[in-house]
Length: 399
Ligand SMILES: *Cc1c(COP(=O)(O)O)cnc(C)c1O
Picture 1 (cartoon, rainbow, N blue to C red):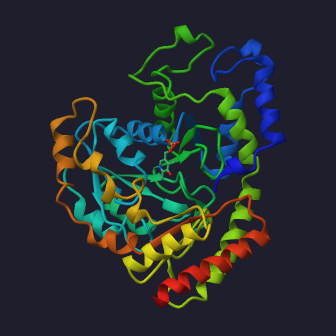
Picture 2: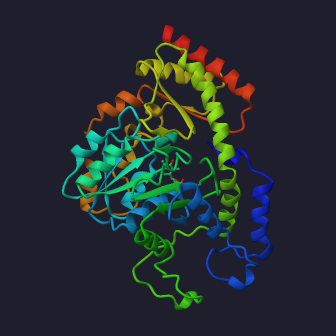
Picture 3: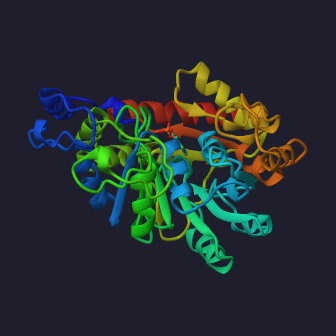
């Protein structure tokens, strides 16, 4: 997945354009720029990439989720449904607005189970946020139908799935709003950065103003701009945008390498009886950023994970025992370890997690191994890796 692996002259040229004139900020300073508008140019590129009407760059993927929700009016006391398997950014971004994260089970797609979503809806529910984890997606039509039926906002966190599609549409462009990250380990990187995408002009206008202190961006004089509403600073700098501009032009190349490497590994593991794969919904195509597979039980998954580590197979994760991506180890969330006071309703919402079991999620995450697909591997290296992986898995299955 990581764009940082392939970094070179194109990136340097774009960054040097910015250093040439010294305008490191995306707004204003028109006279000094010598025509360089990297953030604007990146937004235009991303509109083509995502086949979407509007793109607002922001400072991170986490910021993108907060800005997306804020732009659609989600805030204090509203419940946002999200999956148990995700990155910590999901609940952070929701809580930043005073909203309540409501965690629900995943299914064999490794993201939101539509049935679990429907069961979690209350009169306080305002939005459903799917997280397209590890390059693939959930049952988008089923989730969309639930949102329509209950009049809920539908948001996609596609931070890990740039380049994936569903029924021909880019992931991130299907829900009401989509969120992307361009941090240092994502498929394309700005160093740090993110984007909110939408086809709704009003959400876009809100995201544009909100991510820059509520400034309305009318006219040439920043000091003379009015503030239709309160905002915050989630701006992306021109330096970061310049890196992203070079990277986004290489996205097709990155995706082709991912697909090649993924396919070699998957074909090899498919030959092993006892190995199954995550379900990709009909009409969907993964971004091939990760290869996810299941073993028959937790013990075998642990054995495989250890064997991979002992045999130099890096970048594979058993999220059940990992602190980053699964609710099981999020004690800081369950115990509401906040530096500052949190509202009573958010606290009450989180405290329900302390005794809550997510057996269905455990069933999938306990048995899942998730392998990052790197761009820097040669074909020969991937083939060797595949043989090595198969041997580790077979050994564990025979134990
Ligand atoms: C990386 C990531 C984020 C957060 O992005 P940052 O740019 O690091 O803030 C959010 N959600 C998911 C699924 C991610 O993988």
